[in-house]
Image (cartoon, rainbow, N blue to C red; front, top):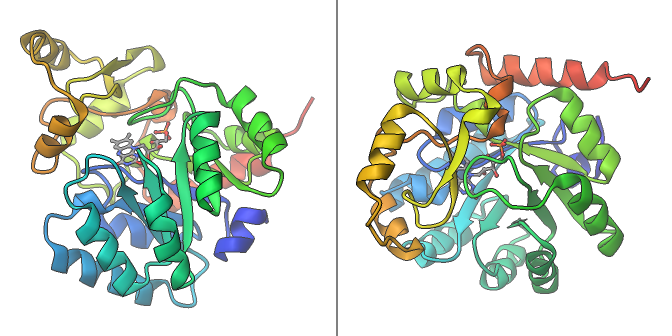
Length: 305
Ligand SMILES: Cc1cc2nc3c(=O)[nH]c(=O)nc-3n(C[C@H](O)[C@H](O)[C@H](O)COP(=O)(O)O)c2cc1C
């Protein structure tokens, strides 16, 4: 399926495997590259700067001659490693950078100077304007239903509105797009591609705990709730009994986003399982390659009645 997204990145399918804090890993990125998509990892998944540097170089080599590539996700606000990670991105010339939570201004000129591409996470028109003014190559539009820090807006209105306002901008839609049919709908709305996170939590290449994978497999769409206890900003999590107990015990904890990020930078999720509404579509553990093949098959078999 060829779109502006596949052409700009020279990939086979218009799909981004979304960056996921404490979930994305190098093996997942290699599987994404082999599957002909764009795989992303948050730089915050690295505690060791040298490891980040050597993994970027390894992935650059791995993706040579393949119809898939990779991106680094750089959190702009409240990220204690922002400058160190940006420097490594510049030095290694990472092909694609996805900025989130903050103005991408300072990132774009640096990545463009070596020919890299910058996509910016946005959740509303105000952020879209900031990213477009700063010169981003595209938006990753995060709508309601997404895992992580989901947006409040629905993609059915947001995507066509952004397309009208920014006719030439690359638009990647994110949030609950777990069925092949969802991708067809997103493209019909005016997006150039889709970003998918939650379904990859349970893939075989993911190294999260067996309990986390089982919680995602068991969860239904109605089990997704929002909490501020992870980062201070609302994050989508599975409403398990353990989560309810933890939330009750932390009720008086006045966490703000920056302190949340500091804690997160050296923590794991413990018994709190982050996931979006796409849990509804996940029933078995598969490899990333198998999942992409099935997704594309479903997308290609869509017939409008
Ligand atoms: C466990 C988890 C961790 C996430 N961590 C990040 C992150 O570090 N940076 C980021 O920009 N988005 C993060 N997200 C959001 C995803 O990149 C993406 O926008 C979202 O998963 C797409 O929606 P979906 O989960 O419904 O497919 C995270 C999502 C999940 C589920």
